[in-house]
Amino acid sequence: MSHSRDLPASQRPASVPLFDISRQHAALDEQIQSALAAVCRSGKFVLGPECVELERDLAAYSGAKHGIACASGSDALLLALMAYDVGPGAEVICPSYTFFATASAVTRLGATPVFVDIDADTCNLDVAQLESHITPRTKAIIPVHLYGQCVEMGPLVAIARKHGLAIIEDACQAIGAKYHGVPAGALGDVGCFSFYPTKNLGAYGDGGLLTTNDDAIADKLRLLRGHGMQPRYYHRIVGINSRLDTMQAAVLKVKLPHLDAWTAARQERADRYEAWFRASGLDRLFRLPKVAADRRHVWNQYVVHVDGGRRDSLREYLAARKVGTEIYYPVPLHKQECFQYLGYADGSLPNTERAACETLALPIFPELTVAEQRAVVEEIAGYFGVQAVTDGPSEVRRAA
Ligand SMILES: *Cc1c(COP(=O)(O)O)cnc(C)c1O
Image (cartoon, rainbow, N blue to C red):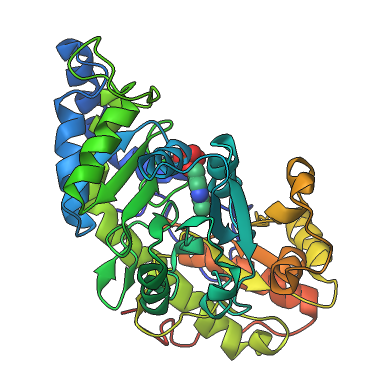
């Protein structure tokens, strides 16, 4: 199914993209086109039958009772907070090292995000620091399963239950990820997913989904995404307009059966990076991503930590050699201009601030070829002045 053929070991690809969605879609083109054409003929463009089927299929995939489709991952977060009546005066605990939407959902409702530092190894919220941030105003916690690896949910859930706090999982990068065998989206009270094209299950545009096991919250989420309207033109609560287009659901329904194979391909590529970096001794020159115990990591991103101020020069070196990289994220949320009013001092979240200077995401996607991966490792070895070893076993570790 691989779209671009692997080159002989001696032949380096002209460039290695960070991500290339077109390869995945090329293989499914006919199926997707006919699914889209069927929606056009049906005329049911918003929350049509394909949306309802997708809600059911993704709830099952995530081990949750209910799936509620919406317009984006950002809206999923907003709707989840609305469902728990988060508003002015409330505090919501979340990491600062995440995509903006995690915290803007909180501030849009007039509530205050309270940032907790991350664990230096996984870049996920450090659960050991959680409890000291809880106040009488705390209403919810948003654990973000960053890069595709679940937060340490066992102790987090225990703390949340003890204090009566809602757990809203930001699983936008983590569809199919697991913690002790339980899927992301079924670990807390509500799970939030995104179908933005760069996510592991990407649409042909924006899309999102909420999961929950709570019947009352599911009903409230369905109301909230449709202006609180039930029946038509009778508004029980003030909601928003955040619905999924049937076209997006149709695309996602074609792609979902392939998700586990794509995840396995991502895991294989993560294993290969690790084997080759170790064989080349590069694991002593920068830090490889760590998979915590009892996790199924789905590798939305493969992120290394390069210290000593060399991250940016490595990135420039790779860019000059046409190897795509990205920084997730260069500015933590507590240092964003729009959140200065929250009053966080420099150095207040040391692991977060350090990660922002050290993280570098390397190309990883299911269709990334062996030759492309070899080129990435060789260029990085070139930067550090070591010999790349890329002919050993390509798998050192099978992900759970
Ligand atoms: C992508 C993402 C979002 C937002 O999803 P959109 O669908 O782009 O609105 C939220 N949180 C995290 C961690 C994300 O990666």
